[in-house]
Image 1 (cartoon, helix red, strand yellow):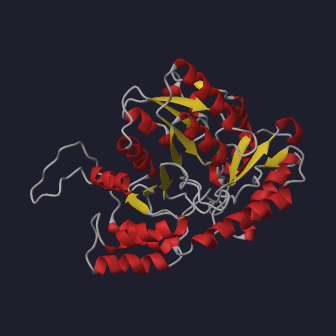
Image 2 (image 1 turned 135 degrees about the horizontal axis):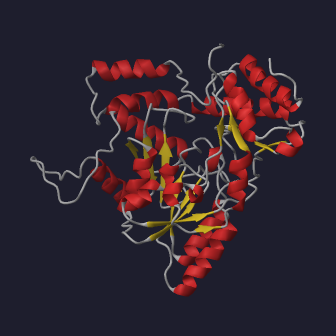
Image 3 (image 1 turned 60 degrees about the vertical axis):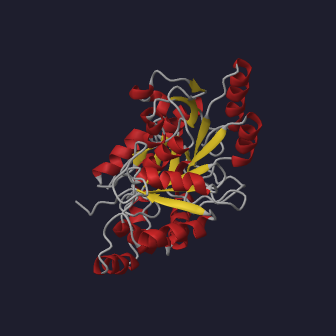
Length: 380
């Protein structure tokens, strides 16, 4: 069998190893050190945020965002339904209540019209949600202007999950810099990686300082170990931060290649009946973290799962879109506003291999198989 083509594997530049070796030579291997500070500073410079905190995961960043803004058990949190469970699980960690909001068809992100509907309804009952967690899906920014205007009007806090949107833009600004707190992920499949990790950013230094304390087991600044609040072991290590510094230095190269891969697929597949690609909405840059297609089985001749399984027989990894949170067994008891758009996207959407180290030959292999499926010829 041919070498496996993965969906979005890590892609090292070579600079990372030099920085990691430096960290080892200096014996900075704990969750403290010069590379950790440098990564936070360089990240701030890249996205245009004043303060940042490097953490063990994007999920940890969302958890600390809720904790530092004093979300309490029983508070309602509105959140995109078309997302990964890591966007929602922290809400349950603290006993708050998620309400899921459907996607809009243009950007596939949280629908501002549905958000307005639910905020109007909650205002009439006198019990507004504590916060909205806006997810920027697959590298495309949500439509932040109406979302921010609505939340300001109703006095509802915005937290951004920009785990998939590093390198994207909205009206010239980086997703993750609009809300009170922005969160990012450096998981192994993201556009850059630290093997595992996340980032918490805010314009409010007090929030970042509090999150920093919580992330280090809430140790008080005294010589002995003193704790006045519950803490967490969420800090990123200096070794992983060294990887992050190397990755961040080639960030724009990675975005360029991701967009090239999308263009390559689109140029060779968009003519096929029943295949459509997620559009790039005019308000910003899509980082094209993953190239995603929608498959209409009646026009194409096969459904999303048949395409996925056929690719898998050729050792090619592809993946359905996120299963909406309101369809997940663990979240069945929570309310959803809308749902039809995200359900359709899940039913028809397929993420194609989009690793930045992919060769044109590998891309051609994927494309050839998809074409053969449509033509109902035996796949060679």
